Image 1: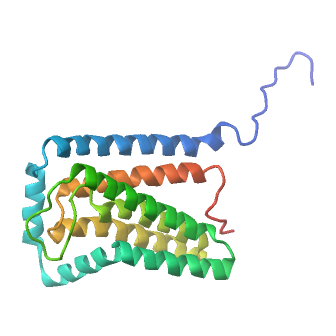
Image 2: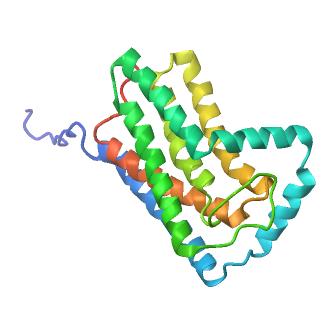
Image 3: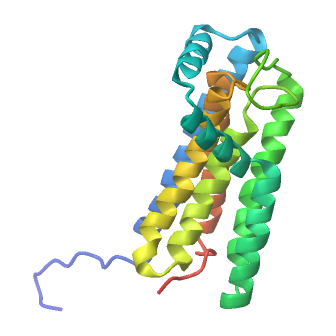
Length: 228
């Protein structure tokens, strides 16, 4: 050390920057949970659809065309619980065989299972009626939309898994397809007339909160595996 010269302390590797993703995810979870809480309170005190719900329903009816209906039906099916269970079994099983890594499949399962339990739990509590008639069959309460909750939690997690395991040229397209399918899965429920807009907004916010919690846990351990 040269006398008279001041030296700044060296930054410790993995200090504040390493905590930033977790902090951002915690804030995201809190904001998403707040949005969900506000929507849930509105539904609790006023179960009937509000103005924006009826407007979105009218717009959905006006947009209905045969080709778009096929797309929305397919998106709704792919976002259903049985279809997601098959996806997890196939993707998780394939990655276990090829990469000998069970963790991506387990993270997908955690995202789906948490979204399923949360959405069905709040449905049982709030018991909001669904729209009178839709293009597909539906059962149970309306709020929050299970498809939207799973769309935000499972399909975004799927996008992250694909970004980690696919060959480099396919990472971006694979992730975009997965996330887009999650969004379409939720929006399809409005188009098909089985959910109100606030049901889907509540599902997206609830799913995002659960996803952020899972990713905050993952931030310390990088459990999705390395793609290097």
